[in-house]
Length: 382
Image (cartoon, rainbow, N blue to C red; front, side, top):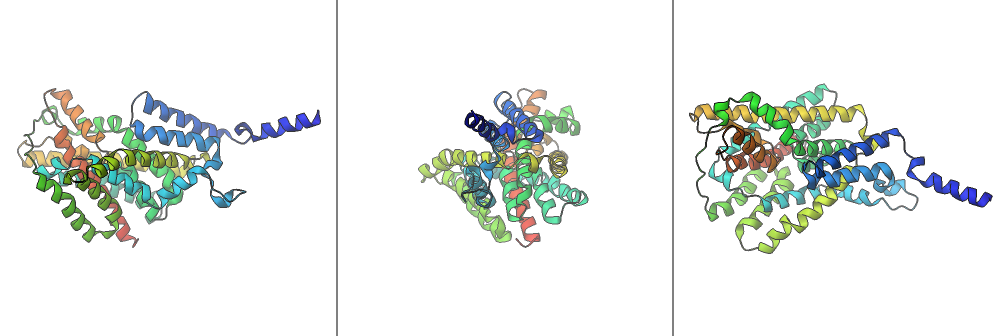
């Protein structure tokens, strides 16, 4: 009888119920909310489903991300090795290659003024940097937190790793990806508050056709210019442009398809689950995380506002030829931010088609956020 009792006791103590506290259950509830938003509401499901499930796993079984030093047999948990690829900047760089292979830079090439709109939207990053220092973060931690304003998860992970802020990587990444998913909720009120009905209804002229030669030269020229000025951006900008060159060259169709499909989705699974697994209750439920979430939201809102306001300036200078709404797409949540510009414009005039015009600032924002990260790395000598 004692043997049975002891066996049952051992089994009971091996269950998660015996080892978790209330904070773990809070995080499990948060994971379920994220899964609901992804599956039921369709908020960036490719990102939120793996992130939420990684969050669920680590708060039920914390050892799934344990390092080899923390285990009895010297072998780390499954997601520890996935997370290591984040820290080494491998997965964020591969994500950028996939994004490049999926993205048409034609709208940006056809309307180079989009570069200015993409640059204006990065204002939120540097605003958040100054605020983060005021919140008590160190210079490098403030830089890692502020990049959330670009609404670019891979760049946020990349910069946090490069600046040695691995302890903040989980909250930073979750905040960045969450705001990417919540673009349709956060941006429209800001866009409508800063524009008039007349401005939102502006029809823009059709973009000029872009030649094949221009599309081939663009990734090569951008890589040369940006990486010569900021060599530290090479892993991100270089991979982004390599993926785009696969797409536009027309001679490596297999590589383009692999980068934009199979490889891209494999990397999303690895990156998403490992990012989610970095949100254990003890690492996530603290005041530092709350400050990161607040600062990220401020950065994202300021970036959106700066893009719209700069769009209004260009609208004035061009005598009404540019719809200010496309400025909000300067954050690098591709292509969600461009779709939001289209949706808000169509609410005023269903015949208004802004999507392709908004894609210019949107892809410029991807480059701009990578450049902002490169600026921080140059400042800190990384």
